View (tube, rainbow, N blue to C red):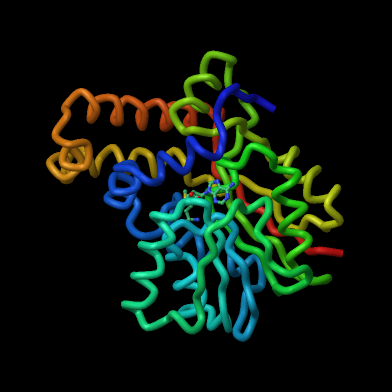
Length: 267
Ligand SMILES: C[S@@+](CC[C@H](N)C(=O)[O-])C[C@H]1O[C@@H](n2cnc3c(N)ncnc32)[C@H](O)[C@@H]1O
């Protein structure tokens, strides 16, 4: 597994407490993951998420995924865990505005130590977020502790692809993303199995490269001014962002990074 030193939860919280979140929401919308609602639907279908279930979203950000799950899949209730107070406050406000506060609640905590009761959820959910958590075995052990026997862990995440990042590419990728490390599909399968789960889905969604082309087109063709606004009108910062997105697109096209989807059942 490729990793870098000196990146931890405090750096991630600091990044999500600043203008990065506004920039990401401009391009991604409320669902801060590749593929938006379509990606959520694909994950929910494969995980068998249906009416009446109780779920937990580990690293929920502003909770758009949870609001989508209670509306579109008629999930009974969702509890979201996120370490960044600022995004949780924003998420609570949006949830109240949508009148969903009885069914969607938030906790500010490290997802590796959520404090949620054992066997308390039918499913644990996450979208494009566990890449930020350095200790993935601990995180997945926590997910497996929270979900009941027979329940499901369903998530998407950014992973290293089969073509492998060079050491220099990995340093750049991990540094710009504030990831301490990056797992691959086989690594996640191993961790899930070691946590007592039967892995049912472990696959590349095939979305990464096309979506980064879309985001670059959005910046180039429509949202230039709005992006500039999120970086306090610093053209140098905007250039850095565009170069970073181009690099991510290039790595995805080369099969060196990908978005992967996992569904596992706790035995
Ligand atoms: C890309 S966003 C998640 C997007 C969200 N799943 C969605 O689809 O809209 C990543 C989130 O992970 C949170 N996060 C990162 N590390 C965490 C940790 N160890 N515990 C809890 N939250 C964490 C960040 O605060 C941030 O809100």
